[in-house]
Amino acid sequence: MKLPGHDAIARQADEHLVTYRVKLPRKVVEHPFRQVARRVIMALLLLVGTALIVYADRGGYSDSSDDSVDLLDAFYYATVSLSTTGYGDITPVSDAARLTNIFLITPMRVLFLIILVGTTLEVLTERTREEWRLNRWRSTLRDHTVVVGFGTKGRSAIQTVCATGLKKEQVVVVDPSSKVIEAATADGYAGIVGDATRSEVLKRAEVHKARKIIIATQRDDTAVLVTLTARQLNKGAKIVAAVREEENAPLLKQSGADAVITSASAAGRLLGLSVLSPAAGMVMEDLIQQGTGLDIIERPVIKAEVGKKPRETEDLVVSVVRGHRVLGYDDAAVGTLELTDRLITIVRATPGSQIAPDVRPLRQD
Image 1 (spheres, rainbow, N blue to C red):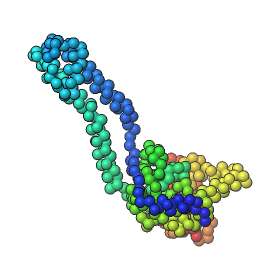
Image 2: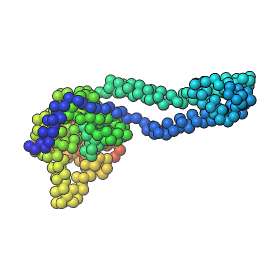
Image 3: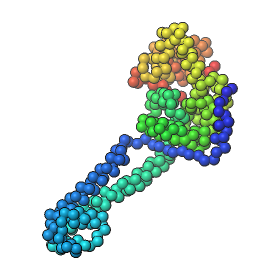
Image 4: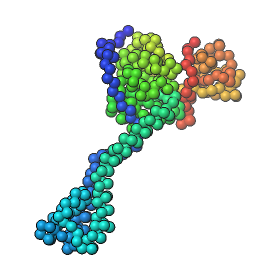
């Protein structure tokens, strides 16, 4: 078995500092720069408006320096008044000026302060809201699916799982890249930024409460460590892992994976099949693509099919799931269909066709 970079992995295992960050899906909000710019413009408009009001009634104000109020004095008074500095060198002396201060300038001062501190208040409120959302998310998350790696394999796996009716709120993505997690949260999934080989990171993903764990890392050695860590935290979850080299598949199974998909050999098989028979390769590629052309689905046996043989059903039956066994359609052990059986069939893809989620691990007989 080849596990490149095992020395680097060992060095990482000796480190005690664990960095992670939880990101929940959120609606698209306005860019922070635009928010700040809008607040600054509103504050300036209030400042100019106040200065014009004072200048229009400049005869009702007294300046201790020269007893006259010009445009500069009006802007100066507006600035110190709205900022609540209030030096007292320019004061309203007439009844009209004082009423204007009471009913116009004072509300504008309050609004000006709200605009200035609004950004800080919004940040504090957003942090509190985000913390509340995070705590609520952790307390309600149960029987979810954890996907380690949001590359091509991870994305395709999530799309296939969600095609069964699984809600996006029940999917948690773990990846060391913050940009990748941002893409995942933009698609509606919760994300954890961190190294999935760390138990603390997987705990943040609530992996101990997960029902299914999909491991789609870029390296086989990383997949082994993630599988070991995930199985240690969750003894009952179904773990499916992908590896690049077929010789590493047995180690993944020994580490606790229920199923291992070898991406290199699967791609090679499809390449060889396409060379020998381009039509057969097109059919296999069609089956792999979820929701288009032909789909392979799992469904229960209906009452009208009980007592029939697999070939006598309307659908094209590939295998029969009976108990813990997966039997071929031509297996003599199948006999006739039973009501507790499940059928794996090939059907024309429609919006209603779904792969039924399995409830227990199966072994091939």
